[in-house]
Amino acid sequence: MGPADTTLVDTPAAASSPAHSHGSAPAEVAFPKAIRSFVLRAGRTTSGQAKAVQELGPRFVLPYTGQPLDLMAAFDAAPVSEEQPRPTILEIGFGMGDATAHIASLLPQRNFLCCEVHVPGVGALLKRIGEQNLGNIRILAHDAVEVIDHMLPLWNASEPQIGLDGVHIFFPDPWHKKRHNKRRLIQPALVAKLAARLKPGGYLHCATDWQEYAEQILEVLGAEPLL
Image: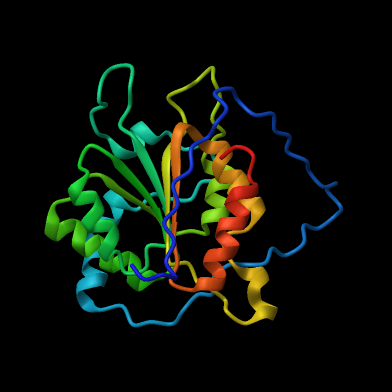
């Protein structure tokens, strides 16, 4: 990794559940359109990727339901023990899935819940899942922010098994023009959402090769009190 890369591991300091409130707008008030941190890129899906989506999608691609996700049921894998489910890592934006498949193959006792909206990338990762016989990956082809908000519950001390053990965000779009910086994924609001869903001892791992973005990431993570 070069000097402009950053790899960050942070641990929630508090072992108790943070207090959260979820406000709602009156029915007659429309929600403002959220600023997306991504654009849907055009790209050709190869025949191999399309075949993987058709054959493996029903097992490995989870539907976006907007309801809390039962991670143990989603992965249909035996827990580490009766009291301890397999650790679950959330990955946001896996691109074409090369690193995701490699890491999952090295850590077969961990589950990887991966969000990506790029259809060829979803097909590419599914193809790797089939080729490498990986059973510990599930994909949500949906906006990660909405997945976090509506499908991943907050960690709380009364249900300590529920929560994320880690989050991977590798090389998010730097949106390098200053007027586009507001579209960057690593912002205080998102980091707060992620930190509130991490188990005590969980980690947030970010990497970028854009130095100015690396400095912003360090500043944002350093300001989050749950990390």
